[in-house]
Image 1 (spheres, helix red, strand yellow):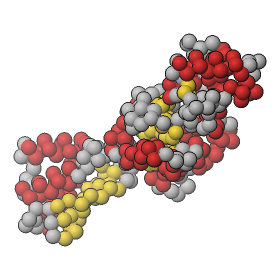
Image 2 (image 1 turned 90 degrees about the vertical axis):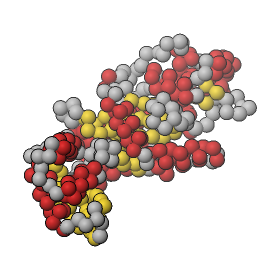
Image 3 (image 1 turned 120 degrees about the vertical axis):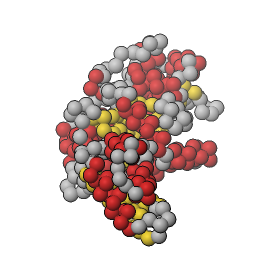
Image 4 (image 1 turned 45 degrees about the horizontal axis):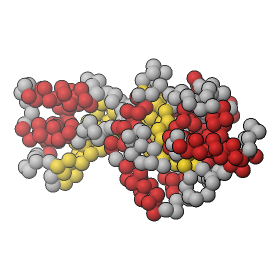
Length: 355
């Protein structure tokens, strides 16, 4: 869903007449605002249409039979189902664009101002959390650019530190085990060998080049040094370099949670947010989209949890290359009309930064 292509006055969804659409819209909007069931008398006072409570009850019964509403208890009030929220988002949602002041506030909050890129991206996720009253997500894939320098430093018996410096200045460290009987000169030799092979290569290209070189016995490395080279490169696996996920505002997901079952669901969500699979899936969702996408409940395949929604957008460079994903995760009663333009604009700003 791309906010820039949607009308502020959407057409009626298939299968709904104007009266049913107005009632469903009002119930979802009240649900987003309060989380409470809405009854026919309340609707009769709030709807722009002159409908009696009895007529509204009949329409609500039809919407309930269609799987768009449900009654949480014996009262006459109704709440939207996930199917009802989906229909609202797809066909009834109205939202505007951000004001110039709002755009400037977002842009200014994400200016580097001497901060590291990591701190700036963490700030972006905090900002999204604050603006959405949910958890903010920012995924930045690790750079696949050229490697500038690699160095091995002895840490003690059978341990060494591998230092990798990217052409973009990013520094990463890993600790590896070293073979028994490794002479100190082997670490220096391993570093010299790899640095001589760099030639502007990415880590993936370097790994492939070194593997081919060593397989063909073109290098004159001692077998222990060759083992160090292989171990050093292996510490940066493809999965390990999948990306960095910043999540802020998790505590907002716990607001108003009173049911033990719901608390268990949120705990499961926290655990899944920490997994590498989540980062890769987020990036896949962004890559499949031209703009903002909304997933309700288990639709995304990201968490498989009911009662939650994910709003995600790709961060693209000016050349249209995807360099990350920006999103929000929260309860299904997110303020979608507010969140969609915020996520969309933030993704554009982050895309320019990462590009």
